[in-house]
Length: 154
Image (cartoon, rainbow, N blue to C red; front, side, top):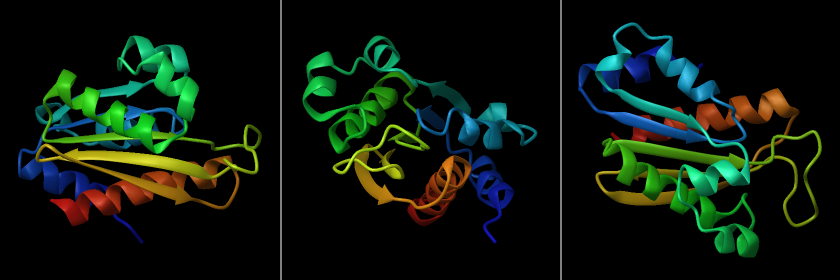
């Protein structure tokens, strides 16, 4: 079983700053971080940019990019995390955009499709995942993926 606290405590002990921009996880990853005592030392911000409007207004995602690719896309996840980095200057930035369901999916973009962006050491990576399960399971799998990836990347 993945130990969230061990991973979070590791970045805390190494004084690695982190910021998050979440959509389909609705702040659940931020909550895991803020549940850890002393996290204010490294946790810069946790934004829940759920609507397209908030992605445009807060994260400065151009409307034409959302219109062209959709909010759930590699392009939007990449811009979310790059712009989060510009705002926060955190060593680790993570963006999450996806379709947790139970509705909202299509043949091209099914329920469970999630794009997760990471900026670490000014390098940006975006991962496309197709998680199976219900809404809570998809959110949990997304969070698990993020924490495992943090562990790998630091």
